[in-house]
Image 1 (cartoon, one colour):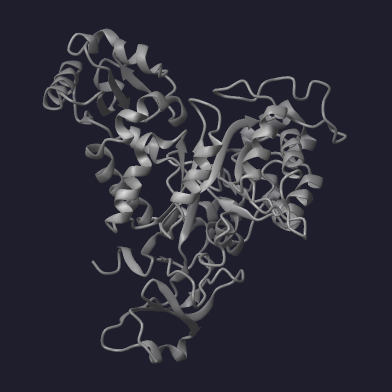
Image 2 (tube, rainbow, N blue to C red):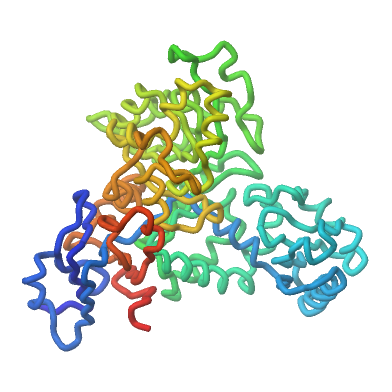
Length: 522
């Protein structure tokens, strides 16, 4: 029998095939898992060349996947001149001017890390920047990455709202930096390192329109064997309507193990609500649901069906139960197999949601993936829930973020972060989803009735996400023959006290059979 390149064993191996860990070994050869079995049988895979990890009671898991992340938004906060250490407005202007002089060919003069407290207590405004640079756009992103300081030319050309900076709103400036190798190559490598340190081995990147040159950067990194995780990407239309012919081309040209196109994120957040008796309200569908385009449900349905017709998937964001129902009506018209399951795996993106129990059953029947931000509990509080109950009705709150009802209905929950909204943190998601606690509350919301088990949360970060991407036959569980994507947690999340579970971190990440992050070998 051949020896393994890497062999890991632990009392707690979570294969994701079941909800509980078991004492097992995992042998890695090349880019594949060669064998998984009882610890006492591990020695047959070991020779003098095998790197062996005795991991005690640490948890060995399939690599984690984030199905909704934005390098485009994350990158925006790291471009250009570094203003994190400036102490006053004059220093800030001098740094910006110096950067501009050293980079005369840059289309935009970028900067990042500015803190209003260090430049007078507020955004200095365009006039200050105009004094040093008026012939090129200047965009300086605040340390929070949610505000920006722009000169007059940038305000006129790119129409970015200085008080509300977010990925979709920055699209006019993206071509200036996403196609610029000076910025993007090194920064994406650092971004991958960050994700690897969180156990991420696959990321689903939301790009805009035709990606403004970013796919060329990804291809370059793939050709140079520098991708340390698998990158799926979806197109989100902002400048124009969804370009379906582009999607067909992208699917045919980006379909490797490491880099693949996965369809369209149709960002038309819909939050319409059903009445208490479960019907549409009289004014349902009368308001537009588009952010950048004036869409209604009928026109959105046309795009969903056209994308499905060419064999691609869509994901839609919904928060209200009426919107979920209407979107399910669209999906019900898409291609299905003999068991009634969606062939192209159209799905939902949920942040905070209310879903009628009847529609949870429909989601399960159609096998519609639910990509849920499982770290959202960090933002909540029971006080906020009380305010929502007063506004929307106490009866409705039983359906609010009810992960238990979703799982029990058979809906496959997958984990997403909306990065940079959250940086992936599996332990944090376990804390909130298992304890039911919101924010810093000491007691669970909903009397703990909306919670998940640790194993269910772990499946959300692993196999369930790959089911949504139709790659579950190749990755997502620890099984012989599957891709060797593995994450190791430095504590036992299945047994640790809930109060300390957020302290557990990733200590080892393997992608494609290669160690891409290790806190064990230092």
